[in-house]
View (spheres, helix red, strand yellow):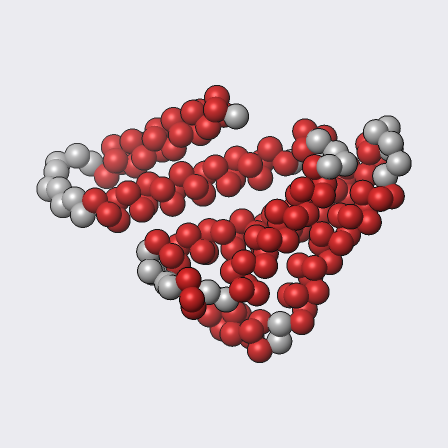
Length: 166
């Protein structure tokens, strides 16, 4: 089974995915209404963490897929599937806004890992896009391991710069 097969199956039966991505912001709103004060948040932070991961993993995947399709595959925006390519992102943004209105992301366990993961994906896609557009052909005697180490150092530099920026 390929990713295209999964997407075709979801396109034929869109109700489960639609219910999932509508339920997540709704659940965040209900949980926000249930939280009475700031002391009560400490008991809810793990449920918020589950909700954040449940919405961010598909949302980040959809963002990455969109960037790949639009930059590398040159897919037209008119051919984008709203349910699979944009609904997860919209649901993620709405859910995170609702959660942020009740609790700081500093209190949510593992939220920094998601931000770091998104930074790494953004850096990798940016570097891949740069090399895709560069069309550089080089004949070199530099060993592949040195190129790999250089690539990792560039990623670490991007990560360090990103942490200083925010």
